[in-house]
Length: 69
Image (cartoon, rainbow, N blue to C red; front, top):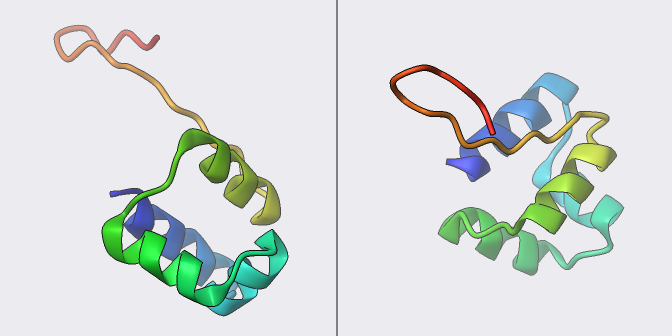
């Protein structure tokens, strides 16, 4: 889920996963493994958003009312 969203932003920014790994000071294998497992914690997502000049928002949304928390 998040891996696909990051891929979309990378494509929109015309950047590669290797570029992202370099900007984050992560090894490319570490980043590729996170993509493969779709295993990013919130702190990592905030940092990825910063590098990609985006805002990361995490919400709980009630299905019946679309109310966000």
